[in-house]
Length: 327
Image (cartoon, rainbow, N blue to C red; front, side, top):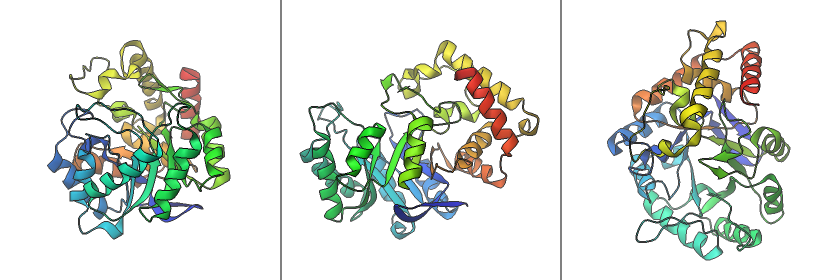
């Protein structure tokens, strides 16, 4: 395993992390089972993976419970990052809520489900509108940190401007955003407008501020595994069915781009997931990749990417292909 460290967090992060969206049980893509997730989490730890990213909204608390079961007895070996800001009601209807009262309430529920005394990183999952002042949100996060319930504070999907404003109130140690080999400066995620652009805005910011950056959807929800084709039809209940970039002509455009990348001589015999992971590992501003897996087989398929490295020539060719196709 390879590791990276950033100035604002006293921890050596495995370059491949473990994304727990797949442990949702519902609300993610279909076919994921708790037992397979627990086995994969345990094998991930044994393989040197030490960064685990989860959120209360994943399965309405279910993913946190699964992670808590899987890490029993291993707490000191890993870095747990969870989130807050998207609670739900008794009808399982979610809403964005970054008020102080909700954030202070949510962290206690997360600690119960994870069966831990504290998390390493608490992230505000999504920003909300101006009805909740940024100062209220960040001061609540600061209070949670001072209580010892989290070591570090992070932001996810915030604008670069608001990250800097937040940094005037409390130390912001990390940023989480949409980034993969094909979606490098995307302006939306599942038709949700994004207030930031990773390559042009966030990378310079995290480098200057010595913050961690964690890319979500690093394998483009499966497109970068090679398992999705032009004819793939997602089942009902699979969240990918609602991703416009995985539908129709947009999907075909991305698949054509991948065919070009696979046409690079030195990559022709490499699995697509390994190319995509290697590409992210090569980026100096990426700390740990939030990779979701279905089971132990997909976990080990991703780990194989660390057995080789992309050459600078290949990286330059990939960048030119992506820029020409989607720039």
